[in-house]
Image 1 (cartoon, rainbow, N blue to C red):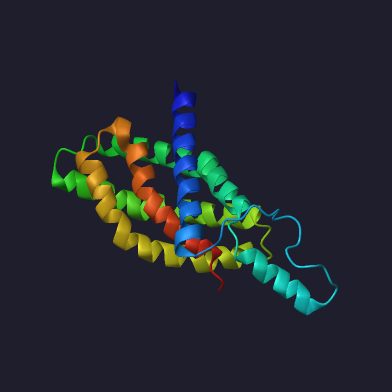
Image 2: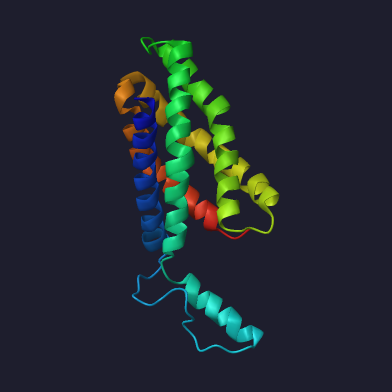
Length: 193
């Protein structure tokens, strides 16, 4: 049924996005895994601003499971369902990718019509879940950066997708390739400025 396809796509995306974020935090950002309670302070509390800054810096050095949960939520509720529906519409509109011309048209549609609204939705959702003070600025800064980088990454991935991947395997393929991409987005979203 349609609902089971959406649920499957969401669960696949949530899994891949969670793994990508965890790997990014630990391998790329060098965060430590610890058994300490992240909700309690790691440095004795004090009312001084300096000590609060030390606490925040100490916290930022450790893996953040809530950040991973936010990425899982986006995968479940946005990424999986959005791309399942988007690629189904592209397939209905363009038909089977039987020629290079059709593959290139599908790739262009995905890159320039499907991708930008997804990025706006992604960074808006992340800003809301992070209780960002300025979601509009976050979206305005992150979306263009992600789009430009995506213009180098996704046309190749989508060409392979439309030319060689059967329709039933598109969401798992995109989730797997997206693991690399989502690691980049996780890093970009967490980056200051």
